[in-house]
Image 1 (cartoon, rainbow, N blue to C red):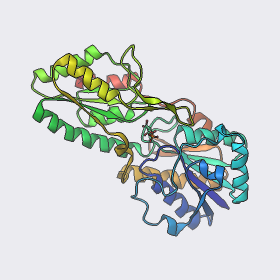
Image 2 (cartoon, helix red, strand yellow):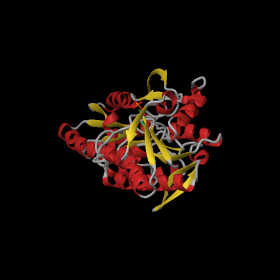
Image 3 (tube, rainbow, N blue to C red):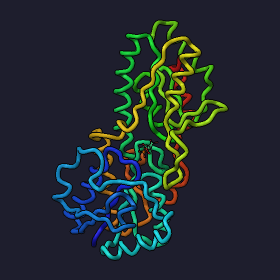
Image 4 (tube, rainbow, N blue to C red):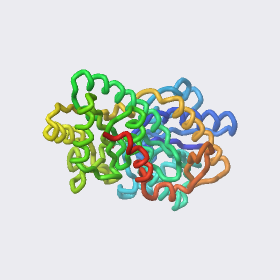
Length: 341
Ligand code: F6P
């Protein structure tokens, strides 16, 4: 049996750990052969491949990024895209495909699976916004990076008695903001799921200065002021229709400076959150997802995504996992009220 592997969408730490795990178990336990498809769905679309065997995955466990490359190519938006993908899978004698990605990459996998393509999915994204799984790999590393940044920003904020606004990624979900904000002891955490009231945020910031502490505000890139609009980089959209977020941090710092009279600075963490070596937890989770994904292929259980439920890895239908986003529940956010201000 020959298995194709691709990584699509925004990269995240742990992708290489999954690839290694799939190949090691596939070769050693099942005697499978592999074809690596380059740059997400562009690989099967354009027939871009790389050799993938045990020597190719040696030493990649702790390495960030992906040895297969990634892209946000959507073959279903390209005329004849599906036919070209199918033809290339046949041309490369690929019997089954493992797609490692987030809602977009796996959304394509779900559509193809419904039309008979033999595909299995593995959930990755720093945003942790995929339905059906408690956690995606990449998220833990991003939260650790953001937490360390918040820790560091506290000390410089205190020295100068300034407000420090930390903008984190996460698109339309506030998971990174909430987890890193709580872990880093932020004084305000703003998430996309809860439009924020600027007067309330200013009051929290001022109350912090009143007791001689400098406030650290964590804001998710998709957070929105009540009655306002999401801040985007420009009007462009990717192949899946997403706008490029970022800018809310700068906007908020300016507003807070004007309202409170205290100097405010912004730190946009950006792609730092996606780069570099994965945390031990992400290596563990990615490795388990890989082992279970190749088992699903062996059993012919296609159209499924590997998912973490508690401590178990289970298989959920790709169609279910890619329907809607997993966002932060208001009751979870409300648990932390006591730390704001
Ligand atoms: O989905 C992962 C993510 O990092 C989001 O948090 C962010 O909005 C987006 O990707 C950034 O995309 P790009 O790397 O294409 O700028």
